[in-house]
Image 1 (cartoon, rainbow, N blue to C red):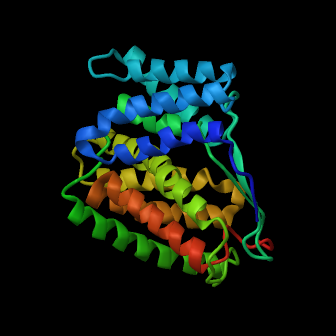
Image 2 (image 1 turned 45 degrees about the vertical axis):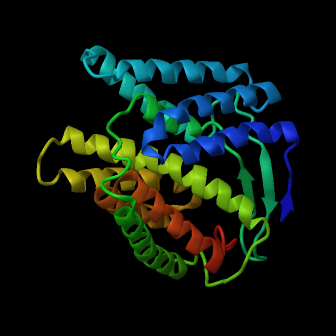
Length: 289
């Protein structure tokens, strides 16, 4: 595994960004996360991790935020949501120009696994910023932290057991307890950024949005879980049909955690599965898969 350390200047955007990802969980301080994100993006422009080709993406997200505010006409609301969904997909797939995400890790964790590259991704972070700014319906928590933590971790362990058993049977991974190099860097990025950005999009926006569209119908929560889980799986189709199936199953577990404990529960469930996978199984997948 080869590491590519950032320069002192290159670290500055990430100090602001990771700080914002921590602050966002402190309810009274959540609004303070926005200026921290703004400082992170400004610093990224200054050091070249963002360039002017990214400006249209920021402008589009701003329009979407304006369009979906309460009281807007459907002529604005529908295009606002449609454009946000397209933009979020493009940002998640890293196809939007102007985001020069730095590569910080490249190599294999085990001889029989595929190469793993770790980029610090600025583009996906825009989804979190948009949710804080514009999408007021995210259930960040559904009760005290002392209730959300055991629910999230418990469902995460159950989801990990099911998903990693299926993945092992499908030949995607195998039992391989280890302590990989650069563990701290992987954990910092995965727990603070990856899990947060993905759960904000798929559970906080998609699942919550489907439930709201379905109104108070008895099947609304299950429709939200089903749609968000399927979309979550489809975005992992690049890893093959089996990988898509496992990630769809994982999405069901995260969706249940969101229903029980809000976004904090979903993020904890997602993080728990990722930690079990990272430390106890071949990561990310076997090369033969």
